[in-house]
Amino acid sequence: MSRIIDVTVPLSADVPTFPGDPRFQMEFSHRIADGKPYNVAKVTMGVHSGTHVDAPYHFLAEGATVEALPLEILMGKVLVVQVTARESIDVADVEGLDLTDEIRVLFKTRMSGQLRSPQFQEDFVYLAPAAAAHLVRAGIKLVGIDYLSVEKFQSRDFAAHHALLEAGVVIVEGLDLSEADPGEYDMACLPLRIVGADGSPARVVLRKRA
Image 1 (tube, rainbow, N blue to C red):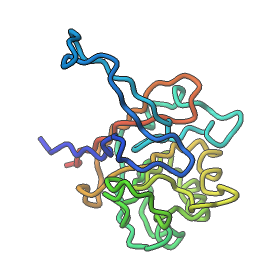
Image 2 (image 1 turned 30 degrees about the vertical axis):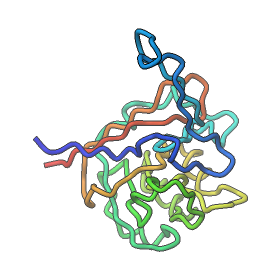
Image 3 (image 1 turned 90 degrees about the vertical axis):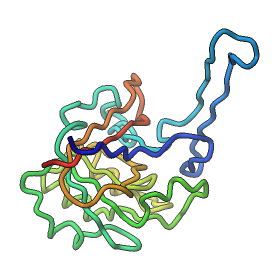
Image 4 (image 1 turned 90 degrees about the horizontal axis):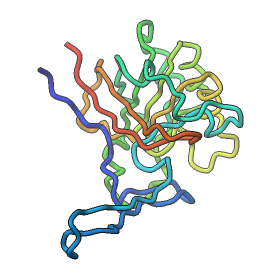
């Protein structure tokens, strides 16, 4: 049986968040060490903490919320693509891909593993709007990237998000693809079933296809 690769960033207070988003915090209301019969922790965080899914409602007032996302899109064959670009994933990086039999694609860039550093990096690799539009035309239904946003930092129009979400494409951000070589995998991506939310943290795992 092939190895399962966990491409989820471990959630802790050290995980960077997008500027302005709530940080992850965990505190215990009950501790065995304090004489209680069990441990119970309380977690506070934004729904875009760590590895997470963007639902259309994130940018579309009438868009689907996270609990309505189809499991058929969140699970199945996925293509991991390595991109060497320093700044952005452009049309030239995607138009040469054979996406004929693909509906899911994850982009591995120089950012994989960087979410294990607590310092937010403004110069992360993003998805150019034209490349996002190309993926939509190619029939892609899920796009993943290995830092906290598909969008250029300090974008004013959020064109990449709009291109994908308006087409019903699920966005997965904050992946760690360090241990995933380029190629085809089976993926399970399961966000929490939070009613009415614009996104959710998710556990994402890959298994290499034979």
